[in-house]
Image (cartoon, rainbow, N blue to C red):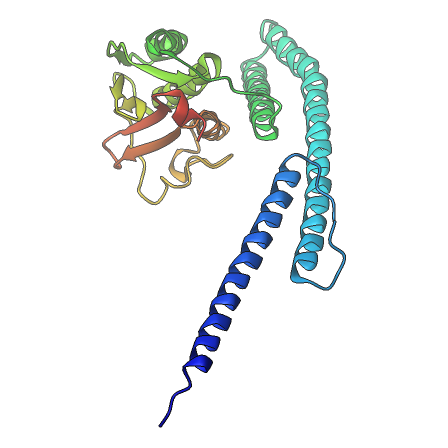
Length: 306
């Protein structure tokens, strides 16, 4: 059987030409796609190919997607502005009435009342204070969620911030004869001093609240390679394993501790502040053995941007 080598050579040449042509077409298409993406990132994207090719169809879909994204971004911006206005209105409209309620209940308590009347005045003042705390906490969390408040974490020592938070909670601890122990630290972290102090105060307030009289609360710091952790450990009643995933939810309160004063928003705020700085918060606890809440903050600027 004779083989015509000319046919074989011809077939090989045709195959090479097809492969080279396909590679050239693919390269040209990828270049066009790259140009489309560059134009989209610069906000200059326009449709150029109006034919029946796949590239034209893809370009049309891409244009529709960018238009829809722009509309969504505009709507999101408008919604944030609306939320910002609503939050400001709520804060402004409720601040004075609540303050007046607290003032008048205090004045009422100073009057000559029956024992039952004094009890009612004290209950009214307690509920007014609770409402004030609730509104303030809701305004803070709503501002964080809506991006109205911007966290500005910077690298620096955390020791002074911890001392300020502990100083704020000291009177409550003294009232229950709870020992507050703070371990010295020279650790650094990337954090917003004001908001991190508030988050730590909430953890301390929570620890003091659920620790019985004559108990103890300890604050210590652990420096890791990627994070700096602030641990708040109490000798309270502890948290069951089933409840631990729920305690950072907004308004969640443990069924076994409904009698303890609180609005169930403090730990939620702690989580929002930690996450807003590139960190996180976790809890380790067993029922009857107290609890340890750990707030992890980035150890360097690069981690805070992740």
